[in-house]
Length: 504
Image 1: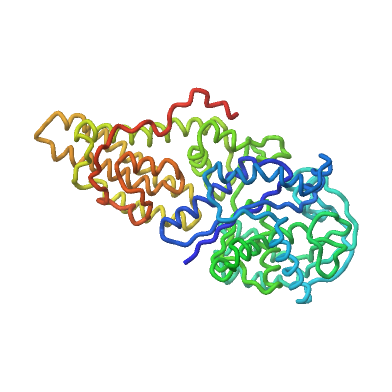
Image 2: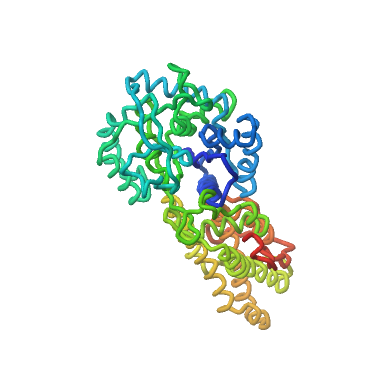
């Protein structure tokens, strides 16, 4: 079985902000978890380089577009690396392989009779690269970016989206889990049921983009260029290998709600026209909000994720992103909340638990974890099933709460059993062995459960307990801890940060 996850490809007209990091973190968590369960995984991310605003940004700086792109792509390539995300391929829409695929893709649609020429006259927002009817504008502005759109009147090629209304409705009715969460499914289906209008798939007189194969005076509309990246990457990500047969049937797209219409309506219709199957699932998440405004460069409230990583480390930023907002919903974020979670949950709840446990094993048992039984074994067994079920439903926030409930349970267990008191009574040596084993075994299982969220910290916990570095999900189970030797008091996993507001 394969598990193929994509992020949207990000516009490169500026540098990444925390909203881009949010989607990348979520995708990496999903993929890492499924890999632990033995699935063959593939994570795709990358950048959209053919947007009008990219060309304009290059012009403003007096640069050739490719020269500009080679500069601006650097922080976008750095973003997943710094987040400890591990994409299997980073696509650029300026790749020759992508451009060749898109030309073939649109030719298929043309040959299928779904393209015709007409005049487009209407509003176009350069920031989100979307066409809008009068009734869609809000006080005359783009409903997404809150800026005045440009008026465009030109001869374009149109896609017969209206011809696919019934097929899309049938798709949605046959597959009620095609779009998640359910309220986003309802939103997309309602849009389709309300009547679909044909849309322009080309731009005339544009010097930047992929020329249409049947009329090279026009280039593909940026979304018709961008959306096929999820397929095109599979044709050239690995030299001489076409990954489409194994990966495309298992494709899962993660996307923000602002691009729902393009992914949940336009994309499946384009695929059907071009003769491809639709993806397995689309998960639409909400926005990160500072106050009540979406975090974005245009809003002037963007947060640089790399600065947060410099202060707190990648694991803490990943934890904060997954924990702070229920994945799938909009959520307000406060920058000081990362400092609070770092200190209270990562430092105190988890870090202190590891330090205390290893220190007691070193002090009371000479660094050897005694063989015994896990008194919280049933809780660990439930954890493996509950986390897997939550992640399968894209509930990465709920899965992390399941894990943290066991972190809290182990902390309560320490206070209830008082191993420091047991150590003073030789008659209770077996009780102390059982207590230390429960703590060590519980932490080992927790480390494996947390590995998708905290890829650096989890192996450190296993090493501190003298355990093998295997992260196989089957080991989120009680009683699998080896005795371990030379266990010493672990250094703090999350050292105190004296200036937690530095990133703000």
